[in-house]
View 1 (cartoon, rainbow, N blue to C red):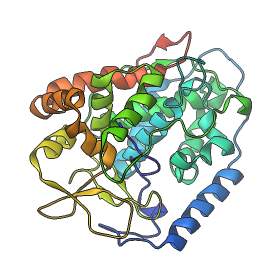
View 2 (view 1 turned 180 degrees about the vertical axis):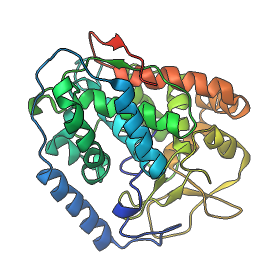
View 3 (view 1 turned 135 degrees about the horizontal axis):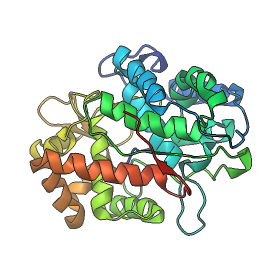
View 4 (view 1 turned 180 degrees about the horizontal axis):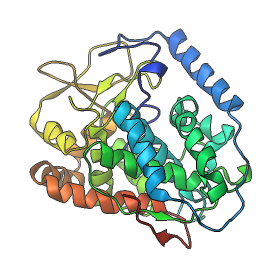
Length: 330
């Protein structure tokens, strides 16, 4: 799940400066303006600093249903809710035992201003605030809300029912981890090379994942698209960006991918149409023998991908947490 920089599961139409289809390349000024506006929005987005532990009277089925309704009404919101869940969880460090979803710290302006979180303050975080307000008195934490939103969105987009546990307690702003814990789209030389595979392993091994789990999580790139106004990259990974399936793997292995001829950051496009794209940290999955084994497995077996993704995404959302309890949410 390279979910690289600001592009994975990216923001829907209202945050794309009215970009439609395959956006034209934005100039540097446009990108700087977007980043600046996102940082300003994050700075102005003030939520309750800490939620005290309370008796758990939350109707999680009702909470999940409301988030699924958001996605049903506007499918473009689904990938962004998944992105929020992932970015709230993917800061975990197994050595220092810091980060992860447990404290709900992505609600704070400091974390929302991290490069990989551009746009989330004015999209997913904002969309979910009325739901939090509705259920806060019953004990709903932001940390539980954001992670439940991820599995609810995946379910609504046709994905597997993912196990989810409740009981996260929101923590104060001091628990925000440093920027830089999320993966990049490209490191080292332009386009895919060994440095990109090394980068993925550095990021995901830090959290406690292995090569199979890295590839399983990468399959979530079936969802969403990149935007030049945010990450600089452009295009969807698949032609069905609001449907959860194994198309990321089938397309990665079956299409010819060529470097895109443009002035933007190095990326790949399908040679036939140029309408689909892959990032360097996607393409490197084909070049690394250990990763490729699982790419081929998931391309051939959608059911296995669903099962492995569900287990790995639940693991992601529970990194660094304690005392959670199994919860029926659907």
